[in-house]
Image: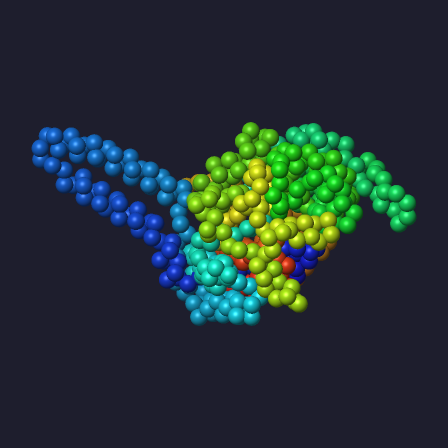
Length: 485
């Protein structure tokens, strides 16, 4: 399966999808806000209808009416822009409630087997949430149960959001996808490629062409990650950040350091998962004139109602940040250590969301989010770039992003502009649909968007290394087998 190849190639993140949550739980936790809104409107209408007969009271009533209409307008406008994903009985959207329960059983088995501490899974079809369930613990040692609004380190699931930010600026005419990135970030002018012979010293040669914005979106830039044996040591020496450690620098600082390192191969030659989307985060800053966190907040999170998604969660929400765990065959499941884990040139921690200077907005790995927040983002993509009355992207841009952009560059793999694309180069090997698009995160989170079945699946845990656990793929299959129409 192409999805497996991507994540084994990383040697790090897992992928698949997920999904699960009971309708009753969803109704309790996520329909309360709209209900409260309607309650407020009913009460204000009552206030208007019962205005006093006295002139003084009439004036007060008129003022109350004005305030009421203003409040109503604000409420309606906010609801139109960013509505909660509504819940529905599975059978009303062609899914089996009985079969969806198998997701919960699979997750619970992994908890009972002490492979994960807990997880949140969500499945939505045709814009309706049919499964949304927190299970296990968000902090096993403190006996804190998993919550529907638990916040997770989503790591590389930041990349699709950054890619959407890039495409919004593309739609505004700021650049073309085949523009050289050096046009906007001059530090990438005249790139060099590393040559490492079997014997003798390494050296560099001029690249055959420059890196384009498209290269960065589809991971054909020649950049890589710290775990690469050839370039990893050079990235460490240059103090290049991958986003999973506290870092004393900005995205501008980091990208300049990255630009000073050679490429692994000539741009466009092959697919290599990389820091390229971090470069795109800096592109967004330069073109928009806004810090990346502000651009995300004003152009994506607020329109979609993603109220719990941050690079650095505020202090009053840190209690909802799930604890990360490790799993090793000889040690079992354990809380992530207080000190970073070192794997060759790749060194990572779990404390970066709340420690350090908090000024690096890593467009490739830095975000933290909830299952419901990320489901809103996925539903926007599934709905052709629209959420309520808010349109983030045109339908044509979503189509472009979710189509294979690699062609002959990678005969076996499908990858679009920010997303993996399944079933476009080879037959599916698991339940799914050709054209479904997806990605995952380093600490064992994943999502899938299936345009054919109109389905979104979210899986959120906090685990790395995973010890080869394939629960995410199992949840994916169980979501598909629950389709009943």
